[in-house]
Amino acid sequence: TYAGWIAIAQPFSTNAISNPAGRIWVQYTGEYTTGTNSAGNPTSTPSSSPATAPTTWLNALANSNFSPDTPNLPLLGNSNNPSSSGGLLIQADPTDGWGQNFGQNMLVADINGDQRDELIIGAPQANGGGQVIVISSSLIQQSLKDGSIINLANISAIANDVIIITPAEPQTTDAEQSEDASIAGFGSALAYDSSTSTLWIGAPNYLQSPSVAENANQNNWQPIGAVYKIV
Image (cartoon, rainbow, N blue to C red; front, side):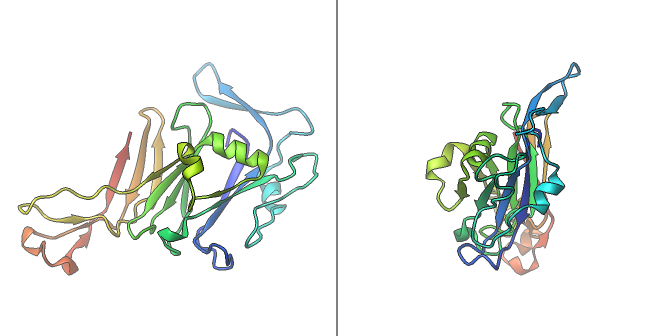
């Protein structure tokens, strides 16, 4: 990202005894100064200071500690990464299901207009129908500095920096074909249109009955898919 970090997901972490629901490592890769050019496009200038200059994402990945039960603590004491922690671990909420595919899709976008990228995480099988989690850039930046673990099973202290989006229940009448989002795969695809400040979320397994006569027979419903628009 322009803020100088890279996110790496492990959607299903069976080797993490403490939380097999999935996790994401966010690796600090150096400090950048962000801004906009004359055309209004975002710019990113690497720090010229040797102590805070960015490493490449490949070096960050190669030196990362993907330990099953501990945060990522790479490059300790390295001049390119003076932080004593150097990485951030985001843990999925296991109550949303161990097979939720947390981090199957990820997107970075400045959705709140603060000139810094939020991390948008898809978990298409969370609670069956899927969910999308948005984590603020300010929380990520602060957590990278202090080596925190973001545990989504307990977000009360960080509720202002985390948004959880779930698919809306379909609203149909008895005279219409019934629909169901309970296994929609919400979060299977993510896209953001900065020109309209719109987040698009794909749900390929969104179901619909083939006819009004089949509304009571859900075994015959078909996955027609849906795309949700979040403004």
